[in-house]
Length: 375
Figure 1 (cartoon, rainbow, N blue to C red):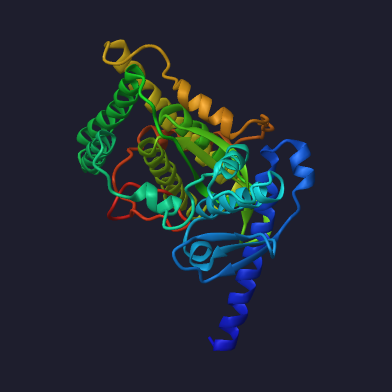
Figure 2 (figure 1 turned 90 degrees about the vertical axis):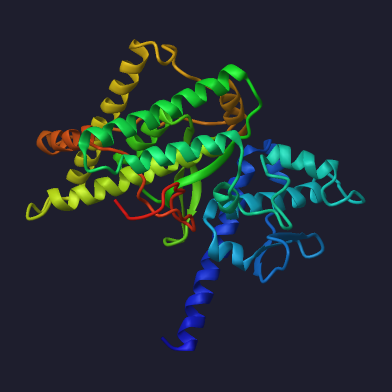
């Protein structure tokens, strides 16, 4: 490819990214009181080769500049986080009269509170994806290591050993979260995208979102997000929870999606079934896996090994209510299903075993905890 063509492609990509930042600026204002939304004017957006910082707000030019490295090499939720931080600087200066205060003074902090922005997302602060994947030695991270070891055992070719390892991993996840609630300690929550922003999401994606919310101690919500490939606004699933729970839930989300894709290729060979039948198949797998997890949980609780009360985290609920002050529920239309395809998916889902086997990587992809071969 010629240098000139590369330059044209780079310019086109950056143009779409700048359009995306403008769209995200508008999305970020929805949490504000209407009186603020009407008065805050859209700034100029630019990309730059910034050093020692991820973004900047320049009041004289009314310009928000983000690091080219950030937007090209990190997932979009990490870009959103930095953008909101810079919007808070704009908001503080233009509407809250922060002139004369330090850059991160009390008025800026108030702007962050109103915008639900991270006041630390600047300077040498690590982007969202790097913070989540960073090594740590807390008690919670040691639990995560134990879970990863059990997932490694779940790769066993012996079905009984694999099933037992996965059951132990899920037992440990639930016990750990119940213990956290009993200790009633303060918890730090984080929000990340799982899957990719898209203009349309198939019905199995909603089922999978509900599954990880019901069994992996995170809260999921569909949020507006720019779809870079299409140059339009779409939405994406964002999950909120402790770093450990977010990593586990994201891993399961990606694992199930890959499992569905792999099994569908085998099932649909020489059948020529359309995309709607793949949704039937995927929904079946998720239903089958849900019934398996539900059965495991019921058995443990019947034996008195876990609480019979449904586990709810009041601090997580409070955090989510603050982060998303206005939400609406969407009811899906009932669609005609192919029972044979659905039942085959259910059968496979009941045999699905979550194991360690997806490469640990998050540059615009899923947030994973495994390392090794693809499943």
